[in-house]
Image 1 (cartoon, rainbow, N blue to C red):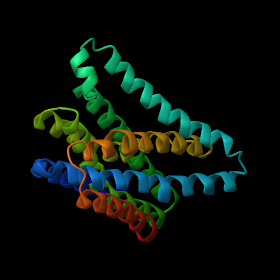
Image 2 (spheres, rainbow, N blue to C red):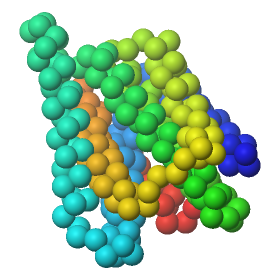
Image 3 (cartoon, helix red, strand yellow):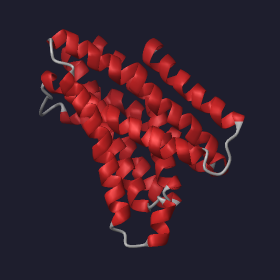
Image 4 (tube, helix red, strand yellow):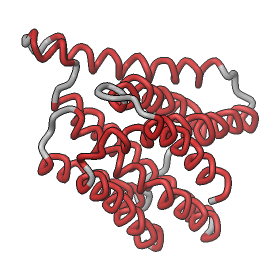
Length: 241
């Protein structure tokens, strides 16, 4: 139960990040530049090192997690483009943006947030110190999760009200994940494959969705700088928090 209480910090952190994005819609291209840097940075500085650590620890073949990474990238690409193709609207298809794509992206991020909460709960199952360390790390980067959720919804032409609804889903997901560990646990051997698939997903939405959109109307030195700062932020969070 302590894990669930601690995970409430992730709720407020995610909510603040999303509200920041909603209040600064006119500067959305700058937020997107920063967000893309954060996502790519999380893959490089957090997910991949963790995958390699687990591979070494469990003496696994690295091919499996890397196949999962490519699979995660291609699966989301296929799902997104299939929805665009089957819309039957040629004008919107050339636009390459649709509310359903935003919802799919936001729901996928909520799924990851749920597993973040699971990570907090499993940490507390080891001991309180491990649980608190994991919780601090999750809370620190959940501000960006909220920002990412709202950004993905808005750039795909969703309303602010719908974006807020998905933000609440993303903010609640870690708390539900922490609560779920009262009833089950995830086999440790599956973590490298899960992390690989999620790394592929983050690479896709960061490099193929958000970053091009950040520069679609105007590419400025400020946007480029914020992308670099986003990656630097991810590095600091994953190394020192």
